[in-house]
Image 1 (cartoon, rainbow, N blue to C red):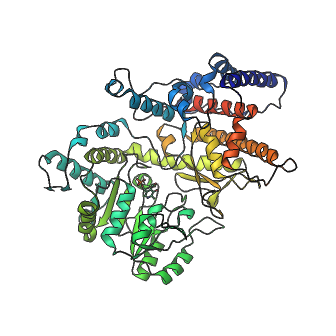
Image 2 (spheres, protein in one colour):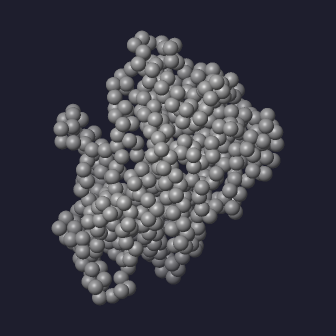
Image 3 (cartoon, rainbow, N blue to C red):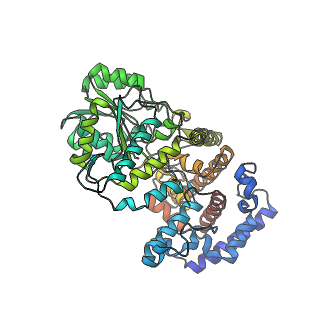
Length: 551
Ligand SMILES: Cc1ncc(COP(=O)(O)O)c(C=O)c1O
């Protein structure tokens, strides 16, 4: 195995060879697709975004360690801040109290802060909360106990806490245009999963039947996921679940199939909503299906609550009995949860949240949520939500333009479900693409797609635009992001082919290559590592030019 010093020397020399080759030959494998030049951010920061080969080689030559890519080297990951690439202002200033109180945690937060700044965050369920939201989260409210409901607490000293929770509830109802005589809301759930379990606890008896979208079809664990061998989610331990699925060919939810499953299974609760479904929901049809079997209709709008608030996704409130949500995805708030319910169910919901399942509310979260709800009611947020969807469509189109297939052929929301198996039968998997992207500072996650034979080895990658849209990326920027993803994919294919060829000298295709072998192959091949290093540098140069909300 090569020493690190050897690798740096080798990387630098390979970089110089690439430069020489670029000068001499038009065939050199370096993307000709440049970062967009006409976005607002770009006009502001053109010089910062430049990432020519000369710059790359210069940085490799002068500071080789700053662009080295480390695989499975956790120690190095946390002790080498320079690995993040282009220098950016850290949110943790030198006069930080935390820095002197706990230098280890301070250092790790600083590194995570830098990772968020310099990388491209494409995880569909993540976002960047505003500075105001973060200030409320870090406030004195974390000190206070307030078990109970507004005006009915088990502790004294809650006059301001009551006002904060009331304000939060009022803003939540107002944001979704709900009449307080018809709807109520509980803002105490610690997050989305507790919100869902509290809803089941409130509305169902143990072993009642629920039907939600199957996890491999894009549903969420908490909607009752289980395998033949294991009850994976607690929901499937305490309730009986039978999922409905997407059509394996089209990727769209099959509502006729849902109706026939409901006829047989007769659920007490039908659940709409998911974590990896990129199309609009037909709530009206689901209401009919629920009515036909006497079920309640719950909509888990965790992923799209910001899009509903911004009027770019259909509101579920016209059809649902109960609506749950996380607050940290498209809604761009703190990590928290909400349960909206028709007034007749509110008492049961409140009791399920406290005292049945939770203790003291997280008042800092509730205040931060109130701030986020106020932000979400502004015209600026409506523009943001609309941009999230426009960017998602642009990203999807740009991938299609490069020959890729998307589940359902496109998107209606913030999610693009990228079929990484489809180009040809090259043994590519979501895990391998996810890993290469991660090493190149692009964060996304592997995801099941229709037709997958194994949930452990899925054939898709889920991409999302909420976080980067919060940083100001526009359509042109997302077209460049697609190019960076494409380069990552091409590199993954090269690694796969080298690994497959090594496994079987006669055949380069259809050889099973494990993720471990895939990574070892990459690590031990200087040319592939060089390509990865250049890609990572390009990603970080690009990402670092965009502002970061909350810093
Ligand atoms: C649809 C849906 N519901 C619920 C949850 C659970 O949220 P949390 O992770 O906050 O518990 C998620 C999280 O990804 C989700 O996508």
